[in-house]
Length: 322
Image (cartoon, rainbow, N blue to C red; front, side, top):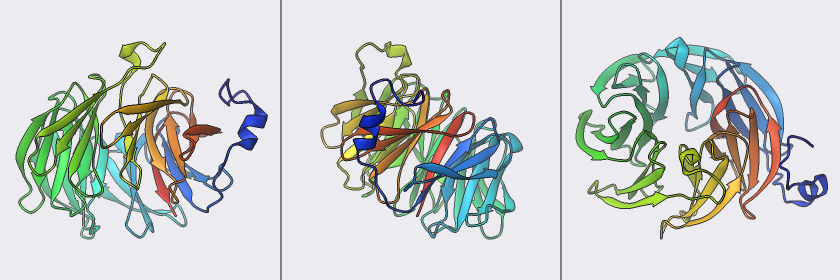
């Protein structure tokens, strides 16, 4: 039981609720150049799939038949048959692709190229680059509005969110955030954009219609040095009431009331938590813990960690597949 948390005995873990729905969580492992596929019913790794070098961002097509993987050190986005694990082909991505978003209509993939300070737009069907948009230095985070009309790129060194009109493929606004923005995401209704700032230690919330700042969320964990509280990936609960934010080397996930922006709770997970993903039924939350090389499973209803699953070295990205 050494991989479980000190405060969780074997009896406690067995007694805590674990969802029994079918589904998968795909985890990219940076150092092993592969993906660990976790069955959400058994909470076991059921497949390990080879990828290109240093896989990071991962997403699925809307029908979940294809996986898109940022193979950062291969300078490629790989397109994989999700059923077989076969790499079908690669898409041109520009240098060092970090994160990406797939448009809601599955037609364009928008990719952050950290080394080139551009956002690359690829036509998924023709496999051609249709645009490269100059953004700030070291772009990382990518977000697309639910209606597909706006894409946002965050730049880590410029400390900005760049708002792009997808019809014209031009930037129409730039908004400042705190130091080293890492992840961006629109709420399900498209009314807000949230951006995490890793070194700044905050999450900034914007009104999507006006690009005006609505709030800035800071964090504080008893017994944890403030320098270690570094917000990176996050996800919103489907009911739109709660956000779960990975806080990096603090080894915690913050639970935030999305109406008041108040932090309600901190959940202890593995070491150096990068990203989070809900199970297909939204009853579980899976965290990628880079340094400890594992995934923490959180029961969403009780907000309690219930299992630690060993995966590859330096797990980074996570995505759900029904």
